[in-house]
Length: 145
Image (cartoon, rainbow, N blue to C red; front, side, top):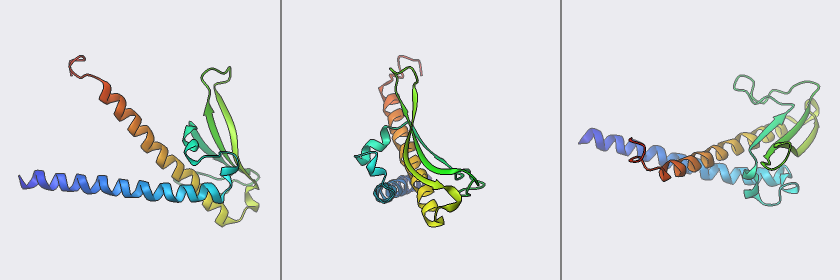
């Protein structure tokens, strides 16, 4: 009984910490949304999550070189919108253009990187919730599971 109770306590603590992290993430993301003037292109904060993806040009987002400037490139936040009825399904939309990456203030570069990573963090939660609901609509008895 004690082992099961310990596992339940650990699971509850983990879920609670994710929810706390998610709330803090959303708060900071909304602040960056305004500070980076993305609100000039996307009027409502929640509309940010209608995009399929948000990428960054001019700065690395890889684990090994996070935030490293790509010389000779332009720093830009790019959103990808999916339009299922259009001839070209994916459309790139610039949410913010900041000029030559090597000329942008390093603090601003980090704020931009932070925005993109925090957007991806929240989007991953939304995707998780979406698939959780879809799985919940399945009837395991019908599928022999």
